[in-house]
Image 1: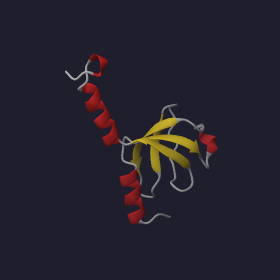
Image 2: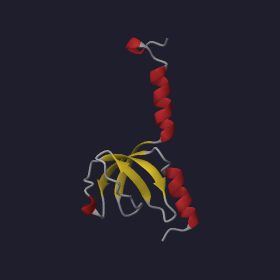
Image 3: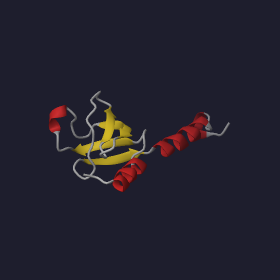
Image 4: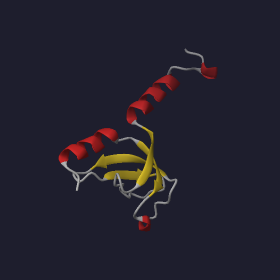
Length: 94
């Protein structure tokens, strides 16, 4: 079982909006196959990372048991959107 400090680190490391790709999971019966991508919707009080997978499933991840990689975090997404918004056609700034 995770202690409060470990859970807070999980919440900081995987904030809501973080994009994740599943590499493998201990619980394959939920229909979430490796390679599927999804978005973090929250972390509960025992440290499970709750996901909304792009295939519509909702299997949670357990750090240290399930194998996954972070594709992007919310602040990275915001920066990318701002760059795109400030560029016109051909990458020129408007």
